[in-house]
Length: 101
Image (cartoon, rainbow, N blue to C red; front, side, top):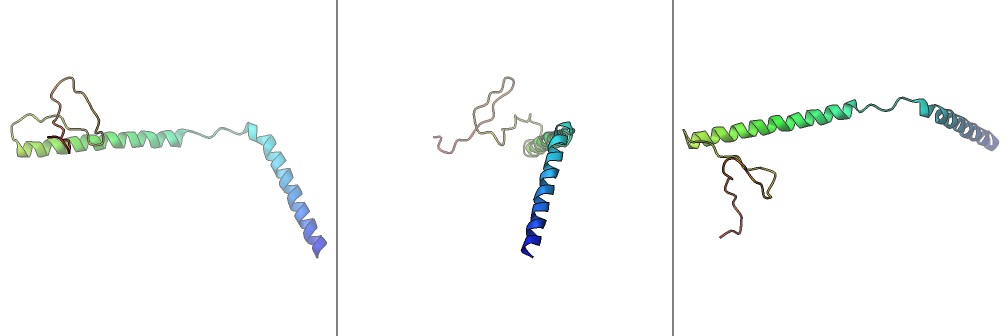
């Protein structure tokens, strides 16, 4: 029984080596993996963000118009960026600092 198991194990290892050798020879000739799924996901994520930002800004304008009818809507403060930012045309929204006097 023991010799039978050793023979089966040796056959398994030998055929495994043969398979590895065969695929190592074929591997350089395989087609490269496609970047299409990755690019598609990145494009979808980008446009999802663009549409989300447009909807957020529109809701901000509508809320401002309800509270201040007939006035010009000031620029919307960035939601996810707390650092300094400059506006070339228009007014910079007032930023509230927690420890400002």
